[in-house]
Image (cartoon, rainbow, N blue to C red; front, side):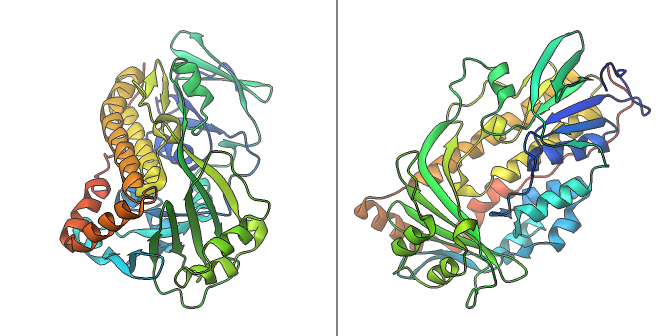
Length: 402
């Protein structure tokens, strides 16, 4: 594939997306809609994160609709109308009004297994566009207006390279060698999908806040659910039997938390420390390389916006590439539109964690809980709208690139 020409049959260019996660696959779909030839290179042999689920707010669904896969995603999802936030003894702090958010935004919040979302995104790409089990070993920007990548013994010249290679992004380190990179947030997360449907699982989405602890679940259409436990802990702490430790720790928390843990196989539990890019990047682009998703703005999960922001990145990048006359102009536009918003969401996620899951002092927790109970439902909806209210730009096929 090396030595390809600068334009394809539609008069547009070639792109390589490094990373086959949600953001990378979405970027590839968007760039193809803009008329580009795209190859996705993923170092992992398997793309499905089978032990996890995801909530997608209206902005994420709108991005997926702009990519042409919105209906398929909604069909595989469960809409989140009921639930909210509780204390460990089951007392209600706030109710979720998913119907009100849907009325305001014209799109629901949904829960979907990550594996299902990955399958839908992969199915939107042609055979051969995705190369798995292969790592990019070299990036050469000395070829004028082209970038050469080497991977798996092959070389590919491209007009554009998209770094969607996650929080440990090698491309980010190359572009910004002086950046401190990801840091530990102070929280660690254990999560899994139940092996079978859970009786008494009435809420579509729910969070429970203890002292420095959060337990939440996302219900799926088939009655199963993803649960997560987020804990304040030193980095690197692991348990010999994570599920047994969680069953002990949450034994006296309200239903259905014990039932969710009882419905889980020990081997299904994943455990990851939560890292973030606490120091914002000065740019999401350099030359003809663009970063998106966690590579550009890895954030804590406390707003549930990480994947949604990656999807926004993908659509915005594809729209800019389709609309602008040059790659450089497109990347300038992408950076100007995406960096302020995504970095603001990352800051808000960090604050939400400090006032939510990470808050541990009993007096501070009591004050926070009282404040939440006194907050009008309309104010809660407006807070959610601040992050979920986003309109995607239109992706059009360009007429040629320099």
